[in-house]
Amino acid sequence: MTVTAAPPPTRTVPPAAHTVRMRHHAVTVALLAPAGLTVVALVLVPLVLVVRNSFARPDAYGGIRGGFTFSNYHELFDPVYLKVFGYSLGMAALNTAVCLVLGYVVSYYLAGRPPQRQGLLLLLIIVPFWTDFLVRTFAWINLLSPGGPVNALTDAVGLTDGQVQWIPSQGASFVGLVYAFLPTAIFPIYATLRGVDPSLGEAARDLGCGWWRVHIRVLLPLVRPGLLAAALLTFVPTLGVFVIPVLLGGGKNQLVGNLIVTLYTEFRNQPMGAAASVALLVLMIVSAVVLGTAASRLRRKAS
Image (cartoon, helix red, strand yellow):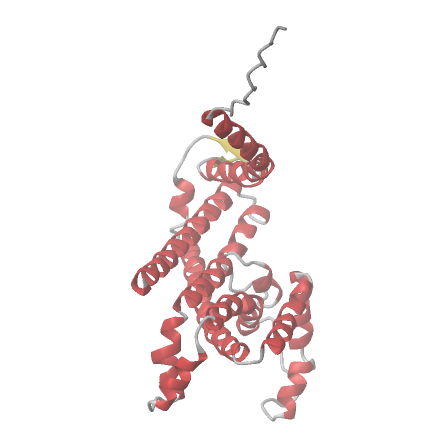
């Protein structure tokens, strides 16, 4: 009787670690490829073209003649263009300040409501912005028109007598800016206030702090990160707005966005329009860096 030895059990050899890493890397690249190609095609390529065109020379018909020159940027230092940039920075700063104050007041009210009501109130803030931005701007034209609802209200309380021409005006343009960017200021402040323990304010009041000192000494220092985020989300986009100053302001006081549109369409000077676009982009980047640095310093101090 012959005894045959059983074959040794076969063991599956696990793949090498570098092979697993390569597979994971290939899967990651495949998943990110569509988004990466979209960003390259719709963001990076147009940005490179705008930067290149900002150093080009215009031809007689408003096109790009080629070449390389710094004259487009040099012309931006003309007092006419500097006035537009200065007005844009001032308008953006004022809009940011008003949105921060109103956003803090609204956020404080929302954070103090019961949780069931908070969701409903947030929905009421969001619902109007489901409508197109241009449609909402035209709605303000109807509201501020002579004999419109705002005019009727001011007549009822005795502030005006008869029809008043509210638009076009700088005040109407500013109201439109506040309306457009107030929700973007409310949400980050509200998100920060929700993380603040309500007992802190109660303890401060028990220790003798009035309403004003409770907010200045206790609450505002705790919501600074939300305020900085709201400032970033308000200040930077305001610089590039061009619809509101045209429709509500009549185009009399232009922001940088209006200047860029004018250079491209009316003056037909694409290199100058590209240079103004790059200058606006630099302003936005500097603003984001400054506010981001301030936010990181606050986080380091808190930790």
